[in-house]
Image: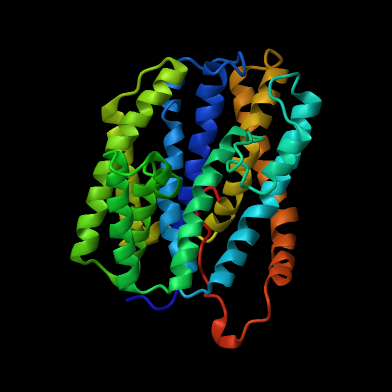
Length: 362
């Protein structure tokens, strides 16, 4: 059993890779396929259309690193860590996206003051208020996962309790899919993506405690359900954008995602770890928050002025630079201040564990 937390630098690199996959999905495929821009990349869309699967990798990573972060923390410490991690960059993302939409959007997207205020809470899905940016839907999925983790922190995390909880969550997933439970139960169960959170948590248990029969059974079951749901989800995406997806490619990508994270849990990838990947990981969340609607608007304003490939590379570079600015001048200085504001003075024995890594686009 590993008793001292360590930074898994390779996960930081995977997070940026997942974010870039989503960026390419939006810029190279869904932007023009969805009618947001006339800058078309027809040939490149054959592979870029699969980029949305970066979100699936995000969720698997999130299951792993959020459990790592929550392990040994009190409920209050866990809540503070999530608030500090999520909200500063998110508020900046909302402000920038709303400002660009109002000043440069030319009716491409619409925002209102009540909508912006509701989005600031990150719970806008509860009253069914539209997101300021389309990518925020994943944050609602993450928030519901965090609420489950908060319950686990309140009960107290042990190896047996976590494994029992994972089996219970997986059973509820199948009950929702079979129609045994009412649809409203899926608000908590999240059967569309629960297998990623469950498998990610199981892989952290593998990393921390080693392999046992439960993990050896649980992760393949989650993989099977992930492939099944991913193929169905791809059909829905294909219908929306009038394209077809290969079940073989979808299966291969999902299997690769699980294999990569299994290698991380087994420490096979530790030779790939580099300290500079921390910076790469730090760019992930603000990049994810900023790139979509702002990027679509800039594409629409700049199309025809420069070569489309130059525009694509320049747009990605600008978004990475903007992400660095948000991290360097918002997240880094504001996070410790917000943490002090939200945290009461803790006794020495209750200090949060060091070395945990933030995960997901969040």
